[in-house]
Length: 205
Image: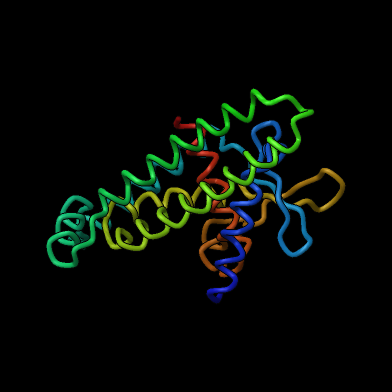
């Protein structure tokens, strides 16, 4: 994928995650290149399998002496003047703003269309700002063991939980195996990864 494809994926994620009708019955429905897909809530077995894969992956990184996150954060600040903790604080403020905006929006009457649209625009702006900081933080921390391990965990679940509509409301797994997903280099793989990350975030919070 080129830079424009990646930008398009994040714009789609930002737009779709604002859609309150996107998630139904613990599933996120979305389209890529005109085809219909969904990401489903992982089962307990899938979560267990993902944990086992994550632990094995982490052990392989430990044997390679991959840098820890706390060491990387310290080195980035000392040698590059990059304050990752400050970036995280800003992300936290945006997340608090999002929660407050959503609560205020939920109290609006349906007839207050102008006010509702204003709130939705403000929420979209906050999502965009938050996403930029998340991407920046991920870029700087990508070499560390914690981020690599978390990414591997999300990728494993993405392979397990992404389905394509083959007939009206009939779905099948997109990638039969995790190895098939690892070969994926399209917008679908990245967008599905974004949605599974959102589902796990909701599951854990």
